[in-house]
Length: 130
Image (cartoon, rainbow, N blue to C red; front, top):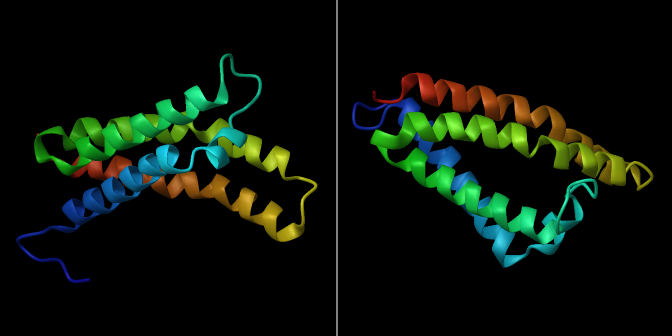
């Protein structure tokens, strides 16, 4: 997609990340059970609490990314969020280790995917209006 003067690449990246986060956050409320199952049992409290709290966080961070004045804050919060949910992705690999190979590979593929999301959030932060 060519860059236009009305919508620079950094703005499009922010919108794409915001859409992904908001959609995923809504998913935590619309269908919480799959998210509940990957919350590490070692965490205190109920899995549903962490599912709903992370859903709120994803929607809030997505909202921050949409607004140019809060985009820098939102991008920093996105980095923190991606790091915070990483243990759930590790837990999914742990739980699915004895599942069929396609399921195991799907769970494992989530781990390195965090890196480009963090890099993208850092780029959005760097290019956000001050």
